[in-house]
Amino acid sequence: MNLLELTLGIMTAVGGFVDISELVFAAQAGSKFHYALMWVFAFATVGIMVFGEMSGRVAAIAKQPVFNLMRHRLGLKLGLVTLLASLISNLITCAAEIGGLAIILHLLTGAGYMLMALASVAVLIATIWVLPFKWIERAYGLLGLFMVVFAVALVKIHPPWADIAAGLVPQIPSGLSTKEMVSFAYFTVAIISAVMFPYEAYFYSSGAIEEKWGPKDLVINRLTCVVGFGLGSLLAISILASSAQLFGPANIDPELPGSAALQAAVPLGRLGLLLALLGMLFAVAGAAVETCMANAYSAAQFFGWEWGRQRKPWEAPRFTIAWIGIMLLGLAIILTGIDPMKLVEYAVLFSILVLPLTYLPLLLLARDPDFMREHRNGLLANVLGWTYFVVILVAAIAAVPLFILTSGGQT
Amino acid sequence: MKPSDSIKLFGGLLDLPILDKDGRYCGIVDDIELDEKAKGPPTIAYLLVGPGAYRGRLPAWAMRLVAVFAGTRITRVTWDAIAHIDSCVKLTGTADSYELHRCENRARSYIPKWGAM
Image (cartoon, rainbow over all chains, first blue to last red; front, top):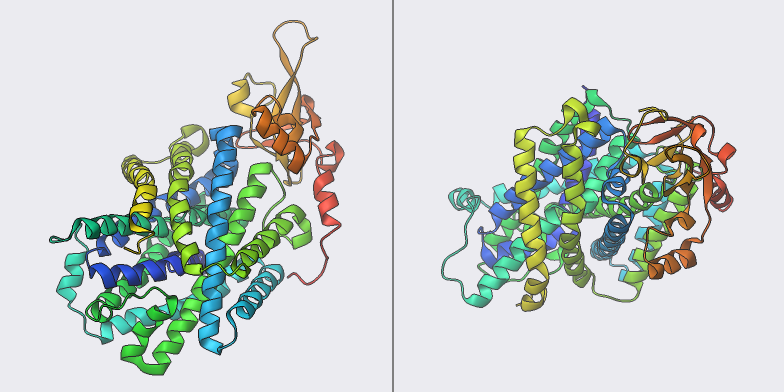
């Protein structure tokens, strides 16, 4: 088994898991509700493991990525609705990641925010243009591992491990006012959305096709999902726990990504701060690449264009124009001056609305004996898949009312 | 599945990706045209590929939007050009021989051909 194959999962985990939404919601969740939302991260992580494994398996066996098969399964009308919804959701997420990158670069260099947004997009486009898929994946995936500093920082502040363990048990904290209860519900939905972002499944399954996975890669697929997503989840949980320990008692609301970096600075000093900012930089950059490419993959697969970054950009020209266009659109959104933290809230809201449309066809395909033959879902995958589908359906129904009632988690 | 096998026509074919003999993507089965002159049960004459083939599958207002953004081009691929059908439709010839890569070729002319590894 080639261990390098695991980097696909590590990138998806680090870049997808600890993206700008993860940073913001993990830090805010810890500050507002201490360890009480930790179980939601663990619960949603199992969800993305289940659907990530299915998307990789479908790609390896049916030899077609999720969006190709989704259109075949849903038909043109519902397929188009799903495509448009996911394009909008991923575009907002991509813009939020570009905004997050600009903030982090501004913190690192002191240069202007807009200038850093422009520079970020230039570097991201150059990276995707120049590097083949495997190198893009490895570069951002491995450099994003600087985020491990958050786990080290958590250990250094000697947190109450018993409280952290208790936080992994599903719970609703007692003594909350109605307003706080609504806010808790909003954060629960937002964390599920942020952890199970639909672009992760699109990117992951398309990556499996890019790397020409087949039945022999099913073990790697499973390991990648469990180890890669598990690592990403541990980092997010570390950010939440540090925030609960450092920000909660001081009544600090860590609304900006820079606040999360301070968690590493408190126990580890300037080096910790630098490593945290670098980790955030590469993880958010990886997520920006993933969201941008996920949109290009989706459009190309839906309309049957040539696609893939294993090919030279001119060998898949419409796909190339799509990813460059999406990156530039994301930049244009940021250049309007919109607050990137607002974009994070909208991204999470849109994503949860798209999630059922994304994961239902995937679930149906993964259990379809015509496509999957002996590799179709077993009992465990079916039970977990349907359970999580019901959860995300309920979360999608609740998302808009909760967003309005809490003004996007602000109250 | 082979083209000569009996199939669940619409469920089996519609919206499947099409690959040419070199494994290059060259569209989706957007609609099917039947041979109405044939005696006996209807047979498939062509696969229709391109946004123009959405007509009849989308509401009129949506089709007008498609026409504005993507045009109304349709390419017809003869039924005997199909080599194999499973999770995709595999053709016996190249995309260019069925004129399925006109848009890709036009888009290619805008892309600089340097700098990529």
